[in-house]
Amino acid sequence: MDIKQLRFFIAIAEEKNITAAATRLHMSQPPLSMQLKQIENELGVQLFERSGKGMELTDKGSVLYQRALHLVNSIEEIKHELKETDEGKRGVISVGINTLSLSGFSEVLQVFHKKYPFVSLKIVQNDSFYLAEMIKTRAIELAFVRLPLEHRGLTYHHLMNEPFFFVTNKETHTISLEEISHTPLIIPSTEGLGIYSTILEAFTRQNLQLNKMAECSDMHTLLELVNGGIGATIVPKSVIDVYMDKIPYSIPINNADLMSSLGVIWLENHYVSTPAKNLIELIKEYYGISQNN
Image (cartoon, rainbow, N blue to C red):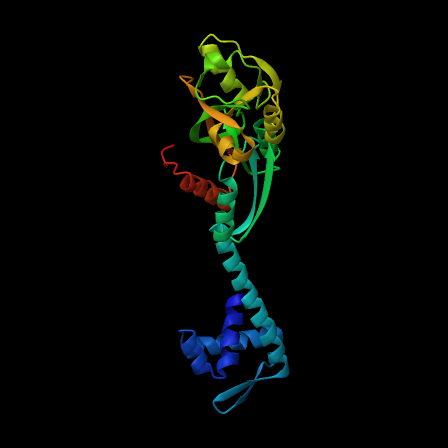
C-alpha cells in the first residue's frame, strides 16, 4: 500500500461513494474499485460496509482513515517545507562579519528577517582572518570581510570599495597622508591582515613611514583611545557611519588613493545554501551594488 492508494481510500471515505470519489480523483470507477479491493486484501480487513449506493467506514476503516489522513497531510507538509527550504524561506544561516563593521548591516538583517521569518540566523563578529578559518572548519557558511585576504580554499566575491578617513580628537579640516605620517597611529587591524596591508601599502607608495604606535581591531577600544588623545587612526567610511557619536573629528585624506575593499567569502567548491544566496543578493540590493561587481 502506497501514498497514492491512501489518497484513493481517503477520497472514497469522504465521498462515501465510488463514483463520486472517482470523479473527484479524475479517474474512472473500475480502476478505483480495484484499488480499494487491493487495499482490503493487503490489510486482510473490510474497510467499508456497502448499503445500496452508499458506503460507510467500518471500525477498522475509521482507524485507517484517521491514520491515512495524518500521514498524507504530513507528507504534504514535508513537500511544502522542502519547497520553502529550496526557495530559502526556511533553514539556518551562519554569517560572519568583520569587526570593522558595515554600516547598515543590522538594517539588512532586519529586512532579511521580515522577508524570511523562518530562517534562523547565527551572527559571528571577528577579524577577517579568524572568520576565514571558521568558514574552513564550517563553523559559519559565509562571511563579509575586508580584502585583501589570503583566500586559499575559499571563494570570494568583491562587493564594493569605500574610502578611508583620518580620525582624531583634535579639530582638523584637511589632511594629507604625508601629514598623517608624523602622527602616531593606532592601526584598526593586526599586521599581515587586509586593512593593515592596505594602509601600509598606501604609505609605501608615497615613500612615507607608517608611524604605528598600536594595533587594535576592537572599534570601541580603539575609538576610546583616540578620544583620550592616545594617537589617531585611519578607518573605512562605514566605521564613521556606525560609530559617528564616538568620533570627534573625521577627515577625508587628500590624494591618498586609499580604499577599503569589502567582499563576501565562502568555502571553495562547497554548496551555498539558498538562504545564504538570498542574504548576499539582499546585501547587493541594499547597498546598490551592481550585478557586475
